[in-house]
Image (cartoon, rainbow, N blue to C red):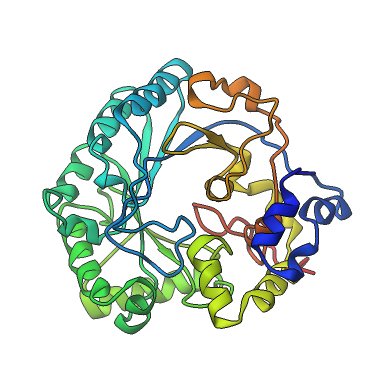
Length: 340
C-alpha cells in the first residue's frame, strides 16, 4: 500500500477512504507493470488554455517548463533503451522551445511519437505551421474536443475555443490527418462536461463522427473517452460546485475489475518537466513518485528495473477503473457487467 495514500486521500473526498489496493485485493488482483513500451513526457505546464477539467492545472501563467538539458537526458534514455513509443504532453507541449527538436530526434531514433495537441495552440505566434510539421514527421495527434456543439465545449475550455478548434480540425484534415488511407492519425478525446462518467466510447464516437461530418465536414480516426480525474483544477471545480463527495462515491461504486489488466500505468513510465519519474501522468500531478527503491530520475532510468514493479496507487485510481475504464488511449474494457 502506498505510504502517500493518506495525504492523497486528504486532497480528495471524505468518501474516498476506500483503499484502492484493498479493493483490488478483494478481486484477487494487484497492480503491477507488465512492460515499458511508452515513455510519456510532460514537457511543462505552460498552456494557452486553462480548461476546467485539467488535471495538470496548466495555463498561460505557468512557468514550469522542461529545459533543453533535461530534454537531452530524456533523449539519452530513449536512445540507450530503444523506447518504442514516446508520448509528448503538457500543458501545450508545442510551447516548449525544445518541442520540435525533441520530436525530430525521437523520429530519427525510430520512435512512434504521439503529441497531445489542444488544437487552438496552432493560432499562437509561430505555431501556424503545426499541421505541416505533424504531417512531415508522421506524428499521431490526439486532441481534446469536449463536444461537437459550441456551448458545451466553450463551457469547459473557454469562450471562443470551439470555433478555433473547428478551424484547426479543418487545417488538420487539409494536410491529410483523419482522412481514410493517409495513415495520418487524428484521434479526439471526449471528457464529460461536469461530474459525470463518460458514456460508452463506441456509441459517442459514432455520434461525433456523424455530427462533425454533417455540420462541419470534419473527419477523424477515433474518439477516446476519458474520465475526469479528481485532481488539480477539476477537483477545485468539484469542491466549488459541491459535487466532490458524490463524484468520488460514483467512481468507487463504478469500480470494474475488468479494467485493471489494460490500465496505461502497466506499460508506461511518466517523466515530469524536471526529469523525475512516475507510474503515470496522474500520479505525477500528485507528486506520487515511483517506489523509492526504483530509479527516481530519467538520468538513472533502466526499464528492466521497472518491469513487474508495483504501481503506486491512491484514491484517484478509481477514476481509471470506473465503468469501461479510462486511460490516455480512452476506454480500456468492453466488459462492464462486473461493476460493483
